[in-house]
Amino acid sequence: APIAAPDLSQCEEATVQKTGLPTMGVACCPPVSTTIIDFKPPSVRKIRYRPAAHLVDSRYLKKFEEALRLMRELDKDDPRSFMQQANVHCAYCNDAYPQTLFPSQPIQVHNSWLFFPFHRFYLYFFERILGKLINDPDFAIPYWNWDSPSGMSMPEIYVGSNSPLYDSKRDLSHLPPSLINLNGGKDNDLSRERQIECNLNLMYREMVRTKIPSLFFGKAYRAGSTADPGAGSVENGSHIAVHIWVGDKEEPYNEDMGNFYSAGRDPIFYAHHANVDRMWNIWKTLPGKKRRDIDDSDWLDSAFLFYDENKNLVRVKVRDCLDSRALGYDYQSVDIPWLGSKA
Ligand code: C2O
Image (cartoon, rainbow, N blue to C red):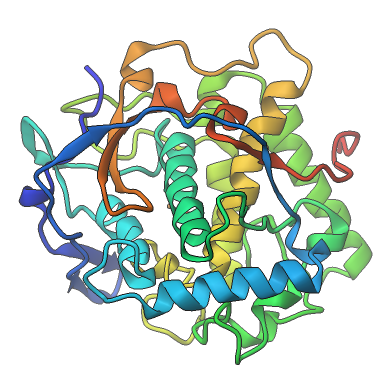
């Protein structure tokens, strides 16, 4: 059976573990609402194109900053506020929700086939909320184009310390022009040319060489089963590397990006995950007969709850997010330099 949507009234304190440190409890449960609406795909009049963060113009940046500033200013109990949005990730990723009907098993949206669809919906609602706050239903969040040489450092728009896009808990030695290491996220002494080449090779392996749905999306995860059956290629590779590379090594749990519970507190998280989400779209367009979404009703009927831009609690199912254009958005198209980076 599919993983069912959590019962918010059963949400418990989240737990953060790290070897060598005591388990830390974090309160990150959302407000409870008893009315739940079933998600209906929006009527799309125009596709919103999420721009590459390093290519946005000042007009776009002003809007984005304004939206994020307003989100940060919302009441802390408003489910659309920035902290509540960050807490969505904490609750779904740090064992705050018991599985409905299997209370001894917590819900975990990483390390399995839930990874891509959960984060797609998470960003979808985050984006709808920002659009609502600035009265622009066509607003689209940026993506961090880390798979392309021109995007392999932290996007400049996130690094100004007076910006609502800024977060102080980051590795300061990784500010631009420092180049990301997509292979593990740790420092090394490769030259810039060699680092770029390694990053492109890694993308080639995760995307082009990974042809089978279970290896791309992650392993099956069904109602009653234990968490973490196995992550897909992108989740396990470039995705984790970016988290590690951005998070502050001086913070006890590598906050913010370096730990699930705090990752959503850094605005760059949403740009990072937009690029992860873009990889899902791209993967399906690469040659190969098996490059399709998973055809298993336990995946398709897996459900989550999110608050939408009107503070309504919405139950979504994986089957409703397979086509990003049906959700009203797609990605600004840029060169994909790793397509031929066979190593
Ligand atoms: Cu939910 Cu990148 O982690």
